[in-house]
Image 1 (cartoon, helix red, strand yellow):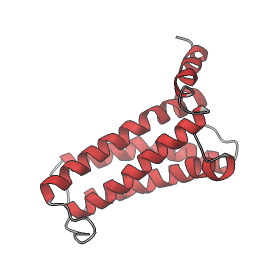
Image 2 (image 1 turned 45 degrees about the vertical axis):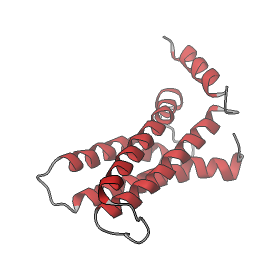
Image 3 (image 1 turned 180 degrees about the vertical axis):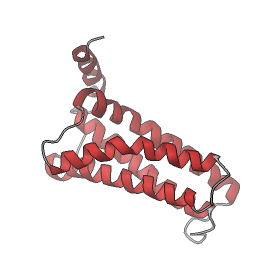
Length: 157
């Protein structure tokens, strides 16, 4: 399938709900960022922190952490698809260049974080370090895209 028809099909699908594909990306990235905040809060609770602020018992908080992570990754997939296959790596200005660089790293950081979660042969402190790094990359991505879109272009669907 040629990229032109792929772009057209993608645009037709996302503009059935959103005004533009960029608005779609901004809102889905915002959903991922909100879920990333849930990830940080529940991750801190799993490691024994924030017990007053996240009063959820460990078996339940683990499920919330896993599902919010799954949903966050799921929300990023159509955004990444648009960025990779339709827009590509761009260097038009500093914001776009920074966003392209951060976008290039996000799934690598995610893979490292998931590897540390499932591998038991490492110091325990590496899991929150990897999670915090992933959160930082996601917030920086959101800041260079969705925040910019909402403040400089328009706030809406």
